[in-house]
Length: 68
Image (cartoon, rainbow, N blue to C red):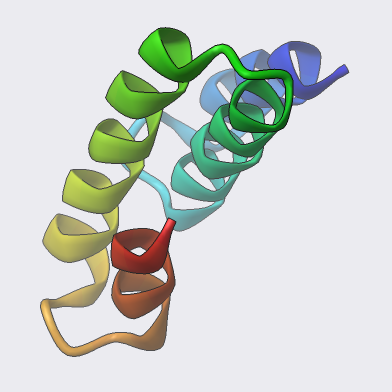
């Protein structure tokens, strides 16, 4: 369902959108909780870079993404 939501958000909102970054973060969290760390890390990094680019380095979502 997270993958489906990610693809839908990409299609409807466009790739560079904070909601797409949130979906990436959610999918990464799922993978992390399943112990699939090698799959989770690139998604977390992609979400972090997207949040920084779209919202700025000092945005709370960037801090959350760094924490993850």
